Image (tube, rainbow, N blue to C red; front, side, top):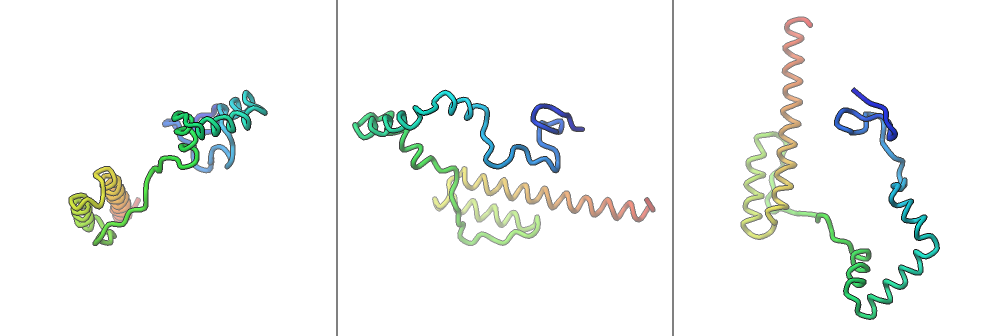
Length: 145
C-alpha cells in the first residue's frame, strides 16, 4: 500500500516506493535553506571569525573548526586475517570464529566485529529467503499451480 503526501509516494513504513529515488542528488533540506537565507552574506565573515578565534586559542572555536576539517570517521576499512570466503550459510560459523579470534587478538573492536557479524546474519537471511522461494516454487509446480 502506498500513500501520497508532500514527499511523494511512500509505503506503510514511510519508505519511498520502488522507482521513487526521493530527493534529487544535491537537493538541500529545508533547514539548510533556512540557515543559508538567515546567514546570507555574513556566512563568510562568521567563518573567518571562528577561524581567527580558533587560532587565538578559543578551544570551542578550535573544536568547531576541526570537526569541519577532519570529521569523526564513521567506519574504517577492515581486514580480518584468515577470514574465510562466505558463500553459504555453512560458512558463517567459520567467519564468526575468525571475527572472535580477531577481537581476542585486539585487531577488531567488539563493535566492528558485531557490524561484520550482522552482515553475515543478513547474508544468511537472504540465502534462506532465496531457498524458501525456490522450494515454494517447486511445490507449486508439483501441485500444478
